[in-house]
Image (tube, rainbow, N blue to C red; front, side, top):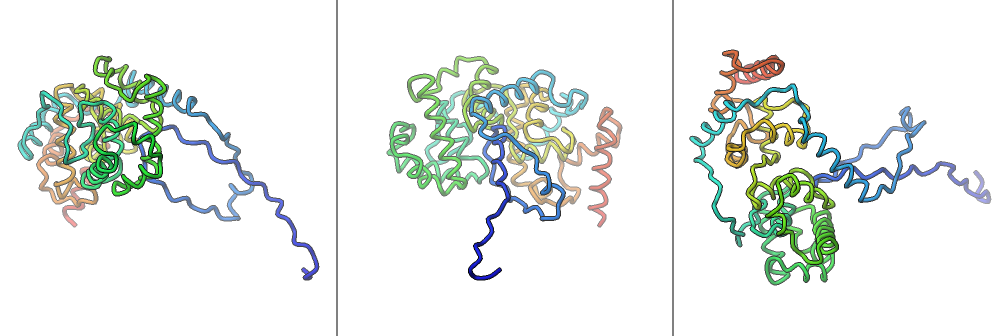
Amino acid sequence: MSLNQAPRRSTRKRLPSLDPKLESDISPPRKIQKIKAESPISKSPTKIKSGTSPQTLRARKLKAHAKDSLDGPFPSFLRPTPSECALAHEILSSLHGPRKRPKVVVASKDRAGCGDSPSVLDALVRTILSQNTSDKNSTRAKINMDHVYGGSDHWEEIVAGGQEKLQEAIKSGGLSQVKSKVILQILAQAKDNYGHYSLDHLHKASTEDAMEELLGFDGVGPKTASCVLLFCLQREDFAVDTHVQRITGLLGWHPKNSSREQTYHHLNKRIPDEHKYGLHILFVTHGKVCDECKAGGKVAGKCELRKAFREQVVKGEVEEPVKQEVKEEINDEVKQEEA
């Protein structure tokens, strides 16, 4: 092309922006892989509708929850049994000490916790701060937020300060841009819906009504709502975090490819109410300290919990159709131990 020739304008059309995902609990941003030019996908891109309203996303979220709550996502998957839940509870209690629900919920001043507050709105915000970070980091974020705004539950000051100020206040907890936006959205929805910054009316609501109302807030998924139910409202609900998802998977309590939300709905139906509070806390504790069950842990054949459930499968105490799948996992573990 000569210097005097005008440059050609690109005839490529921009792809429409992707439709936002069905709202769930806060997740860290994923890396987007570039598609090679020769890929068939690039020749005929699929058009996806953009601009889905928050109301539509909210309706989809509630519809998905209602569907999975009815029969569970895996009605033919027969684990865990009540006896397995009791056994796991007994073993974990012997390893880490029993966990009993407190008679009165007290908001801690030296840790963020996960739903640990008698104020439902405060419990919800604490749970959001705890998403995808360590207890130490979420606590630093909560303490600094309280310091910046003059104390806990100062919702008027938080709203008046705007997102930039809140984002800076909670940055030590990670994902501060997303979390600050979600917190302000929740506060705005609470004020619009009820005329004040409080959700304490949920203490008198049924468990299902409370769950549906919590899921109605933008950015709140089953895990966050379940934590508020379990710890703040003191309901028998089985919250599933990354530790619970991992360990119950190792025990064969849900299908291999089960998402965390599917696992929540499945286990919430299968685990008896009397074990939900204790097992949740004990699974989280065990997942942090057990060398075999923590993230990236290697099988050594010493974990009392996993040994007990391996013996159950070997003795034929696990029902079909999951027996073969669990046996395959055990064979893989044995090979790792022998390596």
